[in-house]
Image 1 (cartoon, rainbow, N blue to C red):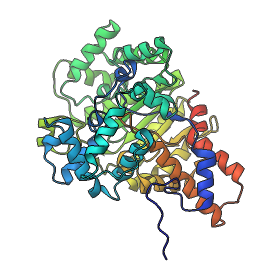
Image 2 (cartoon, rainbow, N blue to C red; image 1 turned 90 degrees about the horizontal axis):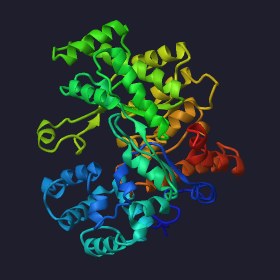
Image 3 (tube, rainbow, N blue to C red; image 1 turned 135 degrees about the vertical axis):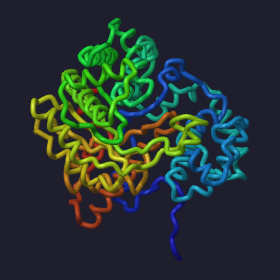
Image 4 (cartoon, rainbow, N blue to C red; image 1 turned 45 degrees about the vertical axis):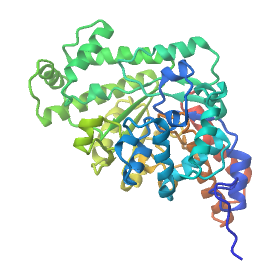
Length: 469
């Protein structure tokens, strides 16, 4: 009789006894450093409670919205005006159709880990699960701080605009009762992407914030440095960029200044001028990060806002983005090399969205690891469309084949949801399965203590040391 494992049991994704041992004895209890996410700091400061399961689970989750649309669900149940329970019903109706999509695993992991609900979500179980979880959400332990504590999150790095006052980070810091360290991350994309028709207004707002009229490239760089230093004073140690590709054209600051002045007075700029400016400002930001001792992150390759009608009606970040096919190698090499030439290259994490670029990124990082810091240049974990089993395995295999998996700083959620932290467990199980299977295949030695230590380092210790938390 064929033995069938139970869905999502204690050995979920663990195919061998050694994989199980690595996970349960080494990985499972490690704390979490979530060094890149989009959690709202105001909700953490205010210790927000949620009225029901839809509010904490479905609001703002474009992963779920995409699945619902693909399942023929009307937009009114995604971003529209249907009631919270009506939206949840449609999500429950969709869940059975998500099998083999990571959403199926994440959905049930989250129900188990947060709410101790082990039933399969479908139309028949929807009402019971909704009521049970919504009732638990009324307890103080299910306010956002309790949820962070439940998942043993030691550090959470939010993603913040240079114009942000960081008042909520300050409130969290002054409160002093939260076990999780909540730190800001500097995300200056709006000051890089000069093609934006609102760019001049961004410059004006930045000038007001630093009490300086920004009418030159030098003044812009100085203003951004002032804001980065403010972020550093609030505990910030990372910068992040979400770009189609790295900008690394040849430039002079004089030419960048001319382009900026044209933009400020409303003159049109050419594609060549735009690229020159973006290359100049991105380089200067890299210099700033190095001076602050920060880590810079680059999320590369998303083709955003593909659906013009949906963008017009719903705005960005509502589920209309996809993998792009941008050329990455030459510009990335030039950008990193230009900073490295004068020893101004900060610790760097590079994430690709197109899986064809895995080996490209895994070899690129080796060009600029200079021995000053273990894993100074990192190939980031599977991101967005790639933060699923196949994507994570392919990223780790490429890194293993061409670099040092043992120095990898591990997983992050990249999420706006306080229920997303089981993604760390998902990653850890996949990591332990890869290593455990290779031990049992004789491809790795049966040195459980050393490989168990390697697992713990990838899960937590490497990040703690790398970011100096």
